[in-house]
Length: 234
Ligand code: DX5
Ligand code: ZN
Image (tube, rainbow, N blue to C red; front, side, top):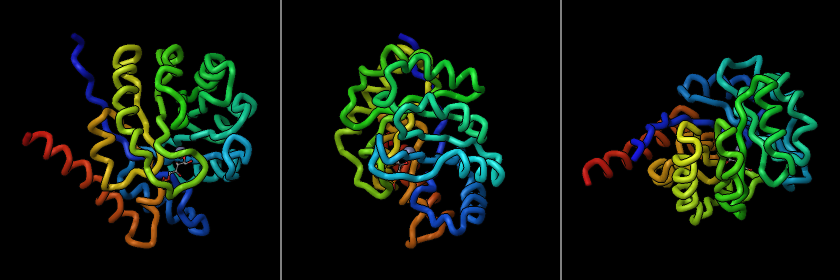
């Protein structure tokens, strides 16, 4: 049997629930917290009920940081906008499998534009639906809430789905990153990592009125360090 690859853990804060009146300060503090990506949630009011922002804000954030920008497109017909997001400075562009009939073409186009390509699945979409595309992508994103809003509760059945997705990727694309998004905090980050997720999106657990960005990031990291220690001692 092939030995399992260790995938480095990356934290990808979603600024969706941050107060954008302080955008520059927030990006500065997030960067100082030693995160790996900035996760940007683009919503069109059609694929999801909410509307957020487009390439203009992505290019603004591009000027504020050198961190890789992880752009999560929750939009219908994503092909129409790939070039605009690449031009705006996206490093990773993730499209939803539910939004495009010609997913392989969409992924090829993303790569041609010089970006890493990701594919996302809604909670009701089966793991198997990305099997054929999995060898072509850099990242798979398992949604652990229904996309549209920050601050929702983690859907518990997602934990086993993450494990099944990691197993599929180990077979068809072992180096592929596995991202999880929605309802992640210090209470469950250890579980999702243990099941095989390695790119962790968190919004309301990082940007809230309870504590600073630095304190919340430290709490998240402690969440998975504790879990790792427990499994080592078992
Ligand atoms: C949901 C978005 C997520 C979300 C994360 O549609 O894709 O990135 O805002 O926020 P929390 O961590 O608050 O669920
Ligand atoms: Zn997201």
